[in-house]
Amino acid sequence: MEFKTISGALVSRFSFGTMQFGGNADEAASAEMYGVCRKAGINFFDTAHGYNEGRSEQILGGLIAGERDDVFVATK
Image (cartoon, rainbow, N blue to C red):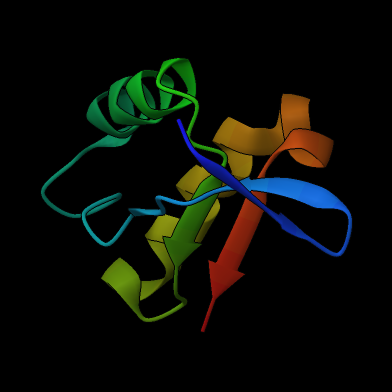
């Protein structure tokens, strides 16, 4: 995985969009996708309150809870 330094932090050049979390992807599928991303080195995730009426943010928040200092989130 390639990283870019932003404000002293290493952020993956790839971001994973979580639009399907809480929609087509239930919590189990969302967790599986998140895990695959983390194993690949991705630490940058994109979400929005408008994604599935806020479920995307809720699910992502639960998934990153144990590693919040290692993950970067863009939300709109």
